[in-house]
Length: 166
Image 1 (cartoon, rainbow, N blue to C red):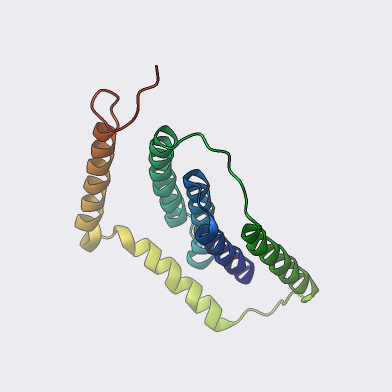
Image 2: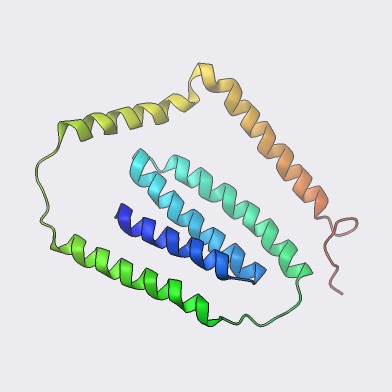
């Protein structure tokens, strides 16, 4: 599963380099973030960090989407011939990995080293809200609050950079 997500992530990166439309670039960033959130969920055995990452990126991308859609001209999105190559590579790599994964027999053996790694990972995720890191959590909350206030002040319709629709 990790190999498949890596192949998808690499193909999104290649498509990002070949794309020219700002709205499509933001869509690729959102898809890349969802892929990264899935990988983080698999490795940390906790969906809390991936959920926070996804919500922060989606909220930022909503602001960017509104800004870009109001400033960019209404252009038709056209795919060039180079754009299909990463899509074909991604599709073939994903089907190959799914086919190879389905041929493998499931193992009932659990490695003791893997169990120890899972326990350490869960311990690290629970340690984030300990007393020693409490001040860092408060600073993160204050930073996000200030960033939200600055973005909302910047995008007000009376004095912000957004174009007014009449």
